[in-house]
Image (cartoon, rainbow, N blue to C red; front, side, top):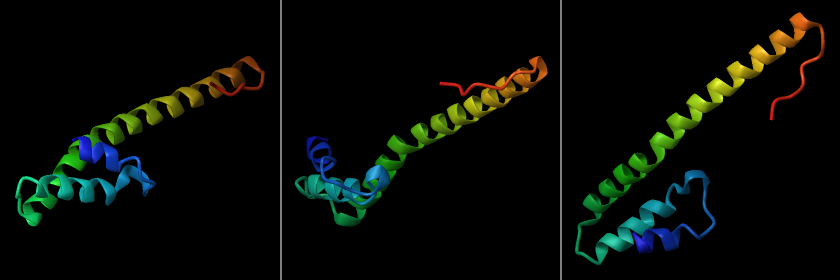
Length: 86
């Protein structure tokens, strides 16, 4: 994990796609893990670490936009302009 975290310091694409997998391959090669198995483990580990954040972010975004729409609707009923949330 230390090698993977050190590699994450490098500039990379969003979600560190590629850098994470390469760092995992290098780290697992020290333990004589075959490259195909190491790559499979890297992809699965990356998905396990990334997908929950994407799902939680989507839920929060949905709830916030739903709340903002309700705020504007209530403001129109009262007859004043809606102020931005935040």
